[in-house]
Amino acid sequence: MSFGQPMVSRSFSMADLQEYICTLEKAIEEEPNVVQQLALDRIRCAFVVSLDILKQNHEELCKEAPTGADFEEYLLSYARAIKGGDL
Image (cartoon, rainbow, N blue to C red; front, side, top):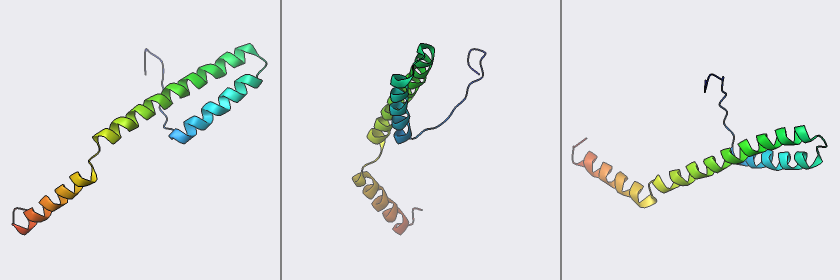
């Protein structure tokens, strides 16, 4: 619920969102009814915002992810701790 309205949550892949946006853009161009054009454009806008958020979240995740060197150092420390009887 948000502001007293039922809400839905759904996950889409980046590729799906890009495909849906392109499909909606084509449908908007071909739709003769202005009211339907506006409704399709609202859906397109929601998908564009979702795609932007997905890209931003992905970039943040990539920045925070450990590097290969970090992972190697962790495994070496773990192996030393096992050999030393610390674990």
